Image 1 (tube, helix red, strand yellow):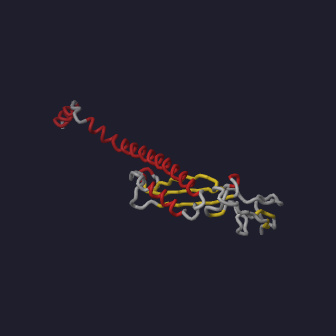
Image 2 (cartoon, rainbow, N blue to C red; image 1 turned 30 degrees about the vertical axis):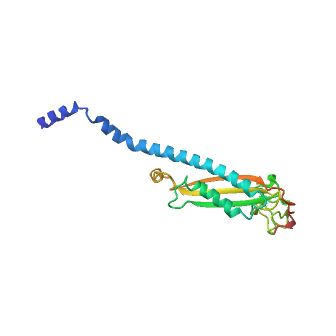
Image 3 (cartoon, rainbow, N blue to C red; image 1 turned 90 degrees about the vertical axis):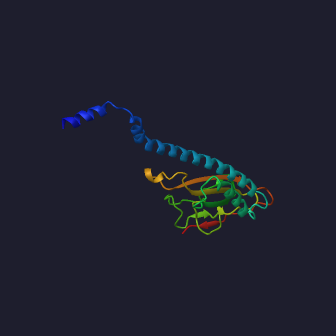
Length: 202
């Protein structure tokens, strides 16, 4: 027993390899931190590129042939973003357009007279059916590119796998989501279509 203790005391004086042990303890945390920073940086970069491509696509769509070429315009955004994202598994793209009469109407509910002050359109209260679907809506917009002079909210949402497989280690979802949107008015290539008709809520 004494011989064993004596041998252990000899090892105590040796410090060779201590740095390797310390690095083994620190390395997992350091690597995880680096991957996390790169993942965040990649998302910021991808969002910036997406915002620029959405602005360009919205300008192209505001022309006379914008509605007819909506699919091709969306494809150009997809082609620009795919090399930045991981293509396998394929990233999912969601393109959405909603048109309004004015910029001030974007994403606003349809106007109604709240006679009973309950904050809801009901009991025969009159409202302005801006989108013509015969029901009161929290968003008065109409799906699609719209007509001349309409204000169009163009939104692109992308879901793609994270750059590094570290999400599960810290409880994050495996997929990353980025979104960009812009509002532009269609060019005055014709007269703006009238919209809005007085209706009553049920």
